[in-house]
Amino acid sequence: QVQLVESGGGSVQAGASLRLSCAASGHTFPNYMAGWFRQAPGLEREFVGSIDWNGATNYANSVKGRFTVSRDDAKLMVYLQMTNLKPEDTAVYYCAARGRWTTTFGYWGQGTQVTVSS
Image (cartoon, rainbow, N blue to C red):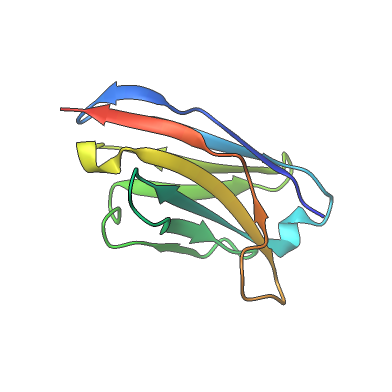
């Protein structure tokens, strides 16, 4: 079992940076892939980025070059560093995790709101 708690959301102006944090529980978390997703009002939840147990990352095209996912397994933390934020990045951001031998993200945080104004 893994529990996830996000923090770090807020309201910023376009062009600003923000770092989201995700605190995980469970000593097996280093064996999990961690992902960030977001959901804007009226839209479906979409993939933002992920980092696997080896530190390999993957990003959505819309955030590539602006967002960075990292993890600190000693602290059971996952981070989403967001730079050059745009109004279209406004959404609720969720941290998620999936086990090494599964194909779906089965653990989710409660979400944190990010609002970017122009």
